Length: 163
Image (cartoon, rainbow, N blue to C red; front, side, top):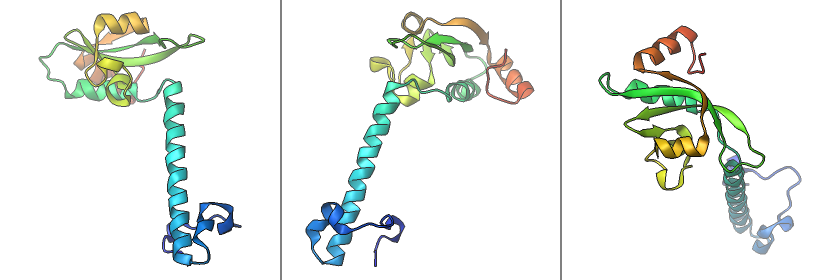
């Protein structure tokens, strides 16, 4: 009988196959050891996922992030939503990908830096525009002010890219 029924052991599980064997024949101790064993596996899996995620460029959220950020900006602010192709810095072999970001008052706000945690000392603050352009070498850029971005999002029915 397992107290943690939602963490039931896999079929064919025997307590002697893992650290729970230390518990002997005490079923409560066996379950406690099994729970600790599962939690350590979960921690290990999370570490692996984090390491894997930092080896690749996280993609897929930049368009929605940029559009939502420009929607929150005031109408009087000088804010531009930019779609373009950027190069992954320090990647070997070098590769490019489609990307979206916000430019406001000389600062570039992009999802990888602001939400995912890339960017080193610029993490959560945004890149100075010159640094972003030096690192990512943006090409084929299309700029939209707030009105143009919202019209394109409604007209196309998605976050972007639109052109």
